Image 1: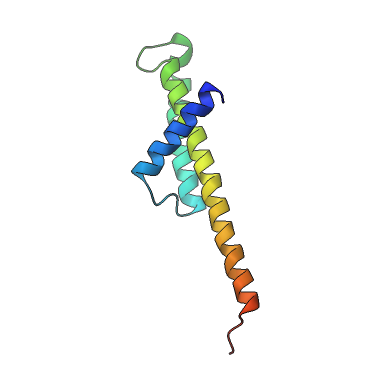
Image 2: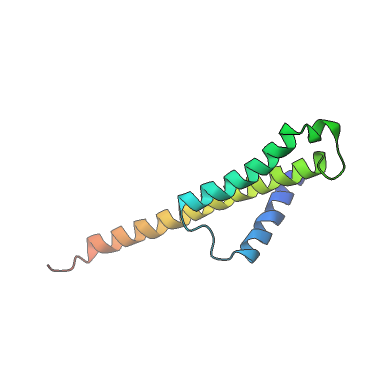
Length: 100
């Protein structure tokens, strides 16, 4: 596993601990990811990455990219969990159809 992947896993664990309920909708996932992308974009716009400004330089950019990747991974996980629940429900419903 690469260092980046390890950092993403650590960030994902932190996010799960801090917000155990996960993302409740695609809209929430989008807004969380967009917030992280906006933070990275601020670094890009100010040219802080190439100037390597200590508090906003390449380490901060790496941290933002790790957060983006972790939130994307969490959104995918949430989506697959929701789809599994929906499949289970419809499979159950097709077997047990309540009478009208």
